[in-house]
Length: 421
Image 1: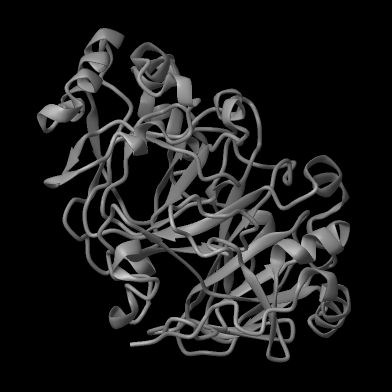
Image 2: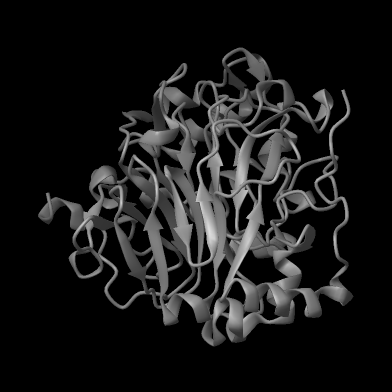
């Protein structure tokens, strides 16, 4: 079976200016995005992200099954054997495609706002659906300081479990997070020493939390976590660094290379250095759930008759507002003007309608290479001006959108759900 190339007919970066201007004018600041699929060689796809089941191995069986769809991404996926554009979102206009990354380079202030573009010169965040049949290895993402040792950026991230993409639990609806209070570095070091003896026993040092649809978590860098089998919406920093600390998962061996891939080469067997990349205090926090768990909070100022806007990712990581996300629901026949202080990446998860002049339609099944009408990049200029959204269907229209750093002056604080129940 042959598949359409995702980059077929792609407009090259030096020719993007003209088509971008036409697309922004026609869409009044909105850009249609096409599905961005990412495989992982060491994971087992959960089959809930609407990709045609017969297309799960469209990149080749040697690359692994497709278990992720990335949204509004200008970040490359750090996969061995990757295609050149893996992880990069593409804009679609009048049948032609161009990279969102090239669009931001061409018109950064219009697309992501002057504050973000002047500081980062890119869209520094992305989100994705992460969908697996079972758990993945207990792992961490490096801090900004540690990632810089190999020329990368750190990766704080967040989770939200959309009910619309979780009709089944799959095999293990729990996520191990952090380490049991009282765990010592010597105990963890012993797990690394035992890597080739089979299961290195790291989960014996951790605690599993049951995953609940419609809730989420913050995951600071340096914190161990082994995501469970709910399909997860993940706003995060624009990096793909990680280190796997678990040697066997569901009988599958995890190569040592996946532990040290984003560490200096001369430290690949320095166990003290490897353990030292963990944020120990956050891992053994006796109030881990209080610090990191999230439940949605209604934004009353942005809600009205027939529509409700909810915070689904909020709070800061080490005092910084790096990303956030909201869920907008419109009842049948309802419409509203969506006005935000900054750009966002939007994915429709239920129903149909329109955003400005662009149609919105939640797909039942997507062929690899097929274009859809569920994803939009809302530019800074469109977001701040306001965009009309209307539900033209017979069921609720629901969309998730995520934002870049320092976007909101009214972002709820960590743990705010406890006083908004």
